[in-house]
Length: 310
Ligand SMILES: [Zn+2]
Image (cartoon, rainbow, N blue to C red; front, side):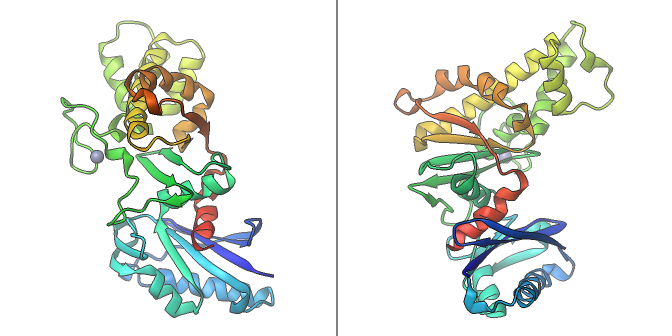
């Protein structure tokens, strides 16, 4: 059989998936990410895990179409990573290094971009060729697929939609050092930031006042149960999400947005909340876009990495 490996490198574990050439999952396992010594053990560990798997399955490297790798850092289209702080990595070519270790064709990409490719291939964006994936987690990640191809950008920073500038008078800095970025409002931390600000001013009763630590889930859950202040927070959240996506749509005119990450657990309600400001700010010629939820969860990176090398 012909198989392909999709590898999702995280800060603590590496998730490895073995797929057939049509993307059917054969097996998945994890190994720890050894980030010590500037991360020099990470790729050799992956190479060893894959060769061990091939041996166990009675296969050799001629049976492998390729290895795709997604990493938490900017990766350009040649496979060069431009620093991945969580892994201790500086700048080097992942593709060449892995091919040297295994003798198997390799491709590499940024993890958020690669997850987008996975959702486009087998998940919420299946069947679409122009898609933007938005991951609403601790930060906001993005991945852009145009004409079925991933847009990595010259320095691997393509699709970083979390850092669109949305607000001029923001006083808290974003992780990138700027002020007023999309992800300061549209991430899970953003839900809490908006929540804190509204709660400070609100004189209305709310279950949220009694919580020692606020989470985006608390806020969305309370809103669903009819808490007025929570509903005001989620409405404000939807305003920012829709506004940011309107900018993206006005530039790229995608067929579909796929929403993933922790906040997307709010489900279709999220799409309902973002639509008013999306319609208000999007260029009318690009406003006829679909919204869908991601379906692959944490497996998206593995699927996308496999697709990257096919
Ligand atoms: Zn930023």
